[in-house]
Image (cartoon, rainbow, N blue to C red; front, side):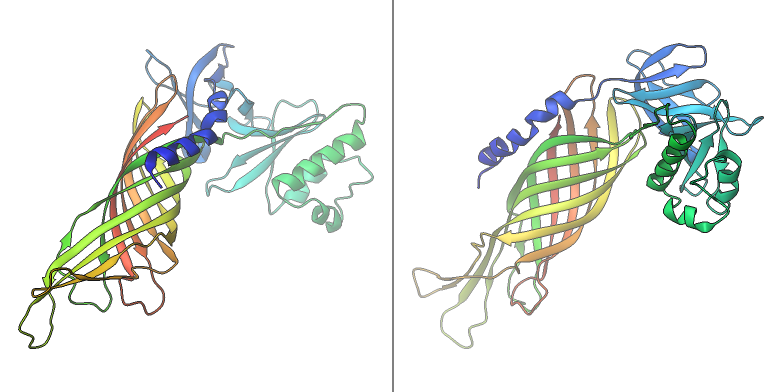
Length: 383
């Protein structure tokens, strides 16, 4: 399989991504101004919003300065006071109706929920350990929801889905003429990209002492990438890549007893992988050029083994060459690296990445290497 053919095939998968590129995000300030650009959520419990705009200084906003923020899909967060005299917090709207439901994060990064009573401008927290008290306070007056018994809480567990169902059922009970709107707001966004690059690999042999010194032979890789990002600095990247692994060991003198001739051995590694890594990424900076680091597990399916083991006797014109098993059918390992993402105002975005991989290639008793290491350089294009 050649790189141009692979890129042509993978390119067909990215065509729909052109139409899915995100429009600029927005912030609505307490003064009523709408500011557009690219936002990032950060800080403890994600209670700060950073706005990046072309030709303007980066601005940061707290819940006291912002009414809401979002993107093309709608509102991602709103600022509402917690308690009658409490300070405003950024929360995510889940259900809007007679009684509304919101979610947020506590200091340990766990989701927790808030109820907004009817005709109220503030939120009532719903702690997981004392949720029934909040239900009795806010969700009263509905005969079908009796919180004096635990059966209602079992029917509507303390999860996003459970509380959405609970608030919707309560609103239908108390105000059947008023429609409740269930929201599916998420800051997660999927980007699709293509990548290609070169690798230099070395192989560790378990039981063969006569393989000689390693000669770096360049291999190559190409594939498609899927990036699941959010408005924070953390994201996840998956890939499906074709990887061509190449390496040469020797020639080296090979023991042949007390024969009058000498023997040189040359081992050539030549096989391919379909590789599927799942990488966790952390990005730095927020300008057009953004460094990042990533790491995660890798699975490889090995095939197209054309490796050879060659013995050249000094008294013969041609070597004795045989096939060589360099790996099992499957490989498992870890990968990590660092890169730069150039993110402009128009697509496509470009990435340059250096990555190191350590793969276990055999779990049985093979006469060849049970593992290999690769240093890779990849150029990517994102849509």
